[in-house]
Length: 225
Image (cartoon, rainbow, N blue to C red; front, side):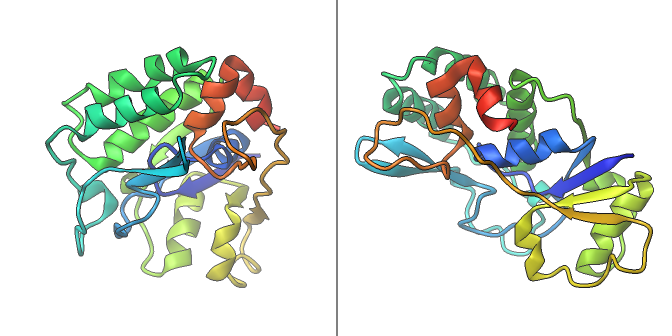
């Protein structure tokens, strides 16, 4: 049985993104679709001194471009993001491991597109978590025209028996899987154990950076439930 999951690459995703990756045999970065401004592709949340704080890659609107066509901007945002993470989690027990994970990607100026940047971070973090999933790109495949057809065609070309989908896709997947030899399964996230956060009310809905900074190697046990 081959389980395939497909998702756009996100910037420093939350823990559920990595749980989804871990449940699949093959994870396909779906970066040939349109880039959407002010979305998870270029920003995410960490905790700051006063609660949630957004960190955003200033890529602009990129109207009409696919995610894998979006160029990374020049400027100090790379160092600024690293410094913000380091400062906000200065008291976290494993901030050193977070910085060791992230810094090589941020300082690799040969990475010039948002897609490659996100993917490099995701794959590096996945390796840290001990995830063995194979990564592929949607650009490798011949795709159908309609939205769900593209997902099905990727799965068929990978000879998948199961398509594991994030629950947000319930907004547009209807009965397309009913008459084909491909089992549609819906991802169920968590439940995750709480850990100490520097906030009044615990939240899982923040970048994976938060979990690793707090738990280090034990983040794997927290996420891959």
